[in-house]
Image 1 (cartoon, rainbow, N blue to C red):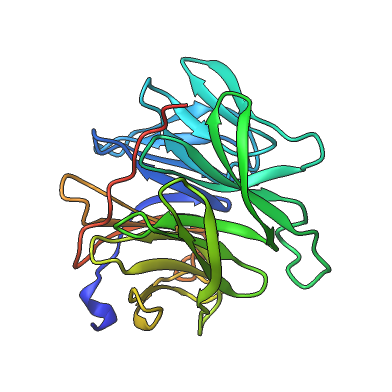
Image 2 (image 1 turned 45 degrees about the vertical axis):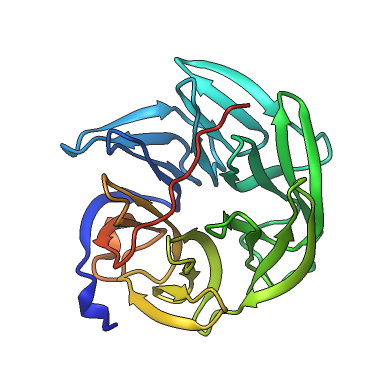
Length: 282
């Protein structure tokens, strides 16, 4: 499918490295600004308000069934009405990055143990955790160099996880009890390195290509299906939204058409609806 099949609408500009895009059932777009701090919400009219002030390093956002948002950073916390409840923390971990929610409302998140902006330096490997209750989490696996996007196949039996530094989107088999096995490399990016990802109803995986000026869609077999060209070199994340979940939101840390715009969020139409993202119930 040619790139011009995806006309881009600009929604947000003037930010730093934007991460964690997520859309609620009122079509409001949540996102974070990693270096400058804060979590924000843009309503369909274009008005943007601050949901969480100042918090830096938020690489992942999820919506909670009881209201508010769950965010990453130095810990994983639920923020609602100005009150913060810590769901998970590790004393020896500098922080956490991208996160996702499983069908039971539990949070999956990767630990960040090295500088994410120096991908060539020796790295301390991190882990993937499943947060099952406040203060209770299970380590699913380890050996993740630079954790980023997480998502499931439509049947919930395959867990995808971007490991950015080695340019790998990993796949794991997940059994009915929630245990992971069978790690393998699902895909490597021909352009850039994998950052955030989202899965559509056809089982294809859309991956933000950091440094690649595009979003790459992979078939369920891990083959490149298309490159969606983006006027930004540092494409950081993607998500689906809208009433039919065919609106594709693309977050970046720059803008090559107009560098003064900085981190930008674009929106286009996908050929297939994205999978619904469950609400957090922890």
